[in-house]
Length: 202
Image 1 (cartoon, rainbow, N blue to C red):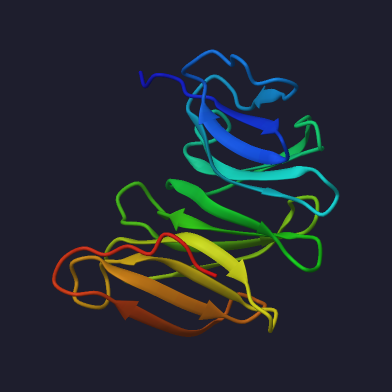
Image 2: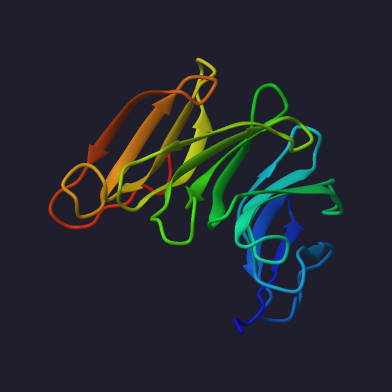
């Protein structure tokens, strides 16, 4: 059985630090730390402060599904207010989450519709309570994943990640632009004969 991992969030001097709980919290002054999850593997891969002073955490969970996107909302002290999971018969994970201009949330990551298929880029839009409004997938017949998402000034979204389906076929940077409903407007790939990944987008 895989060793259980929990994620802690520490607020100190107005900075949010994401750490694994693998050492004592010594000399941190007046901060706090919290853990979230169940009895199996749960990972937090992205965190953002929300407009009400709380935090939104995006990752994946095996405690509350078979490898699902995990979205957690906390107050300003890290106390969980709610959580939501998203996924189907395959494995899904959320690598990046952001609050949107309407008070909801946008998540990007990966989704395999069954355990025998390779993942596609996954984009999920929720309302302010984490209730899914829509989802979209992007990619081809090989391995494609979305690592970072941002809302754009026109109300759409931009995703960066990597693709083995398109480009030079050995893993290229994958840039996708969508409208406000997640409908793809265009995509671009960047890279050469070796492997390139896009980890962040602005």
